[in-house]
Every structure is written in C-alpha cells, then in structure tokens.
Image (cartoon, rainbow, N blue to C red; front, side, top):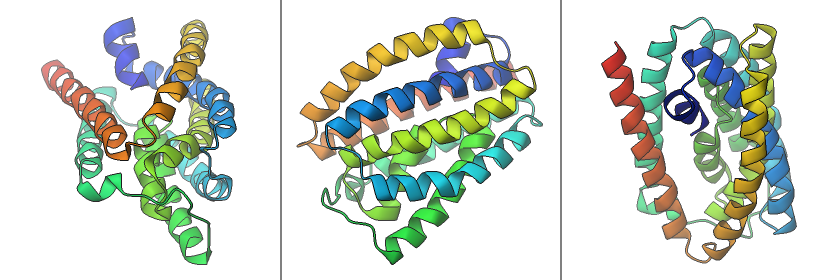
Length: 229
C-alpha cells in the first residue's frame, strides 16, 4: 500500500523514489510492529525465520532489476500482481489455516522455495511485500491468517531493508518523507494489531478485508498507470 500512497496521496513524482522511500519506512514499521504481534502470540518464529532468510538474496537481486525498469511500466506490472494476489486470497481455501502449525522438513522446503520467489518479487517491485508474504506463508506452512500476518513482519522488514539499502545507494530515498511515514506507521501499526486480534476468531472476515483492500488499490494503480502512458 505504501508505494501508491506516496505517489497518489503524498504526491511524489518519481516511482523509483517512492519505491525506495516506502521500502525503508515499511521495513522500520514492520520491525516495530513485529514486537506487538510477538507479544500477542501471533508469530510462528521458526517458519518466519526460514521464509525471511530464504528471500533476502532474492530481494537484493530483484531490487537491482527493478531499478533498471521504467517507473510507469513497473507500476503497471505491480497492479497486475496485486490483482492476482487478491483473487487468490478470496479463494475459500485461503481462509482455512492451522493456528497450531509446527515446522517440519516438508514445510521448511516449501517455505524456502516460496520465500525465495516472494523475496525476488518484493525486491523487484520495491515493496516490503506484505500482500505477497502473507499468502506465501499460508501456502508454505498452512498457518492461519492471523499467524501469517504476524509472522510476515519479519520478512517484510528483512526484504524492505534489503531493498531500501539498494535504492539508498542509488540516491533514491527521501529521508524526510520516510521519517514522517515511519512515525505514522508506528501509531497505525499499534491500532492494527489490536484490530487483527479482535478478528482473529473470524479468519474468513480478516482474509476478505485484506483481499478487498489489495484489489481496490490495484485497480486504482492500474487506472493511474494506464492514464499516464
């Protein structure tokens, strides 16, 4: 959500600058909110760690590739990926999950594969990748939505920081805007943790809210990107 907000609400003109700035802000916010989710018992640490570590190299490679792509084309691709994820999340099976899942060799292999792919996409599109990581964790481990939301923050932070470093080295981070974004994100994240806790017993509702939000933003991004081309 951060890239569209910086471009269409804050008014940043460069898609690449928005990507680099949002990656830094999202990474810091993710690590801050990870503490709250951990205290609430929502983080499956073994699964989260395997997923995050497998995706860091992919995020670095994706960030290097993303900087070489024209910003308008990158946003158009970004919108299509968001729609695909939203459709997948609206599947009835997406609301099912095991809150007591434990990592085993089979789950670890799936998490490594999915984590590497998601890391690459996260770096390429310059995002922390929460809307990719949450379904990725559910696909790889079978965990419930609330656990995937909490566990995803470790990867969001790791992938976002990897991407932010790559973009910062190219001078594509607005540090002032990132500071404001981080301050607001900490407050919003605290509220979000409380809300997700109330909806934890209604996994289907939480999943649908998440999917609809992604779908709406994707439609707006595609509309604006098509208008600009």
